[in-house]
Amino acid sequence: MPENLRIVVATRNRHKLEELRRILSGFPVELEGLDAWPACPEVEETGESFEENASLKASLVAGFTGLPALADDSGLEVDALGGAPGVRSARYAGTGANDRKNLEKLLHELEGVPAGKRTARFSTAIALAAPDGRVVRTFHGRAEGTIGFGPKGETGFGYDPVFYPLGYEMTFAQMGPARKDAISHRAHALRQLKAFLSSPDSRLLLKL
Ligand code: ITT
Image (cartoon, rainbow, N blue to C red; front, side, top):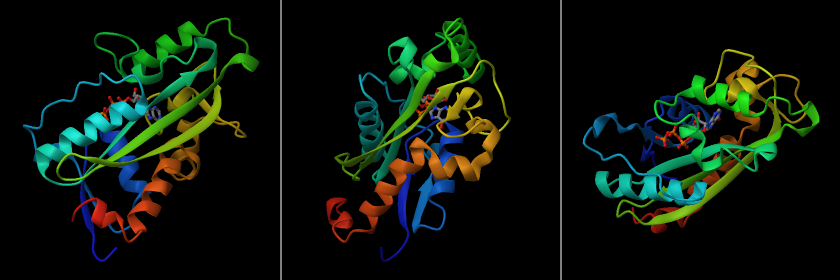
């Protein structure tokens, strides 16, 4: 890439923005938050998949700002709950949902489920849209693991304190940012994004 590419990140979640910036640090992109566009409308996440919702968010924000936009739609899929909370991860606890309430609800729903049956994964879809709102690519990432019996650890956000990634005896919230960024669903998806942005035809597709 010849020079830093300015990309708006279509998120209202500051933790996500922080993670995206961290994982892409050292790569020639400049990620802008939505703060500079207070009038940008909220996107209704009406899609039934992470990919659909990421595309809706990226497309609307790119069209509104006239810049390439990146959106991440993600969530936790718990096998014992038939894949819930899934695309509804942010709204799991209903009206007034926040990270703490969502996590409490999850642990409540899993009461009585034994350790061996608490398998789960974080999934993410990241959509990249051109300044005219066209989605040019989507990228996917997953992190397999299990759900613990109580919150552990202070770092990260969302469901991190109850998620034990496969092969680790600590939660995402206990391992700290550097280790999470090496193995997370978001990091896997962003590796593909980096490969795409490094390819010569990406600017053409983005019409830059
Ligand atoms: P935007 O739509 O504005 O980006 P959001 O928080 O509503 O922000 P999503 O719709 O993608 O984002 O919902 C993601 C949900 O999954 C939310 O509850 C997060 O806390 C949770 N989540 C996503 N990635 C996570 C991660 O890496 N660690 C812990 N929880 C995560």
